[in-house]
Image (tube, rainbow, N blue to C red; front, side, top):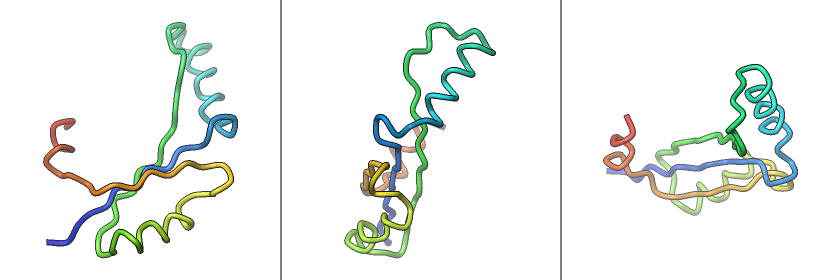
Amino acid sequence: MQAVYRVVVQRKEGANAEATSLKEELINNLKIKELTELDIANIYDIEGMTEEQVKNFTSVLAEPMVDKVTVGEFNKRADKQYI
């Protein structure tokens, strides 16, 4: 069984204009005044590559200057608890 790697890409603080804009929309349009923080993440599950290949491939999925990337082995069993 091949490993599945999960890559999470998020904008670095100060470069997350989309999240800031969405947060303001939610506060103003839906009146969610309690919302203090919002992050947007793109999540990719990659199969058929080694961990080293996945780490090298992250430059395709993210912009190094403005994104932070987290790579880890995907655990299907742990993920199912959130469904």
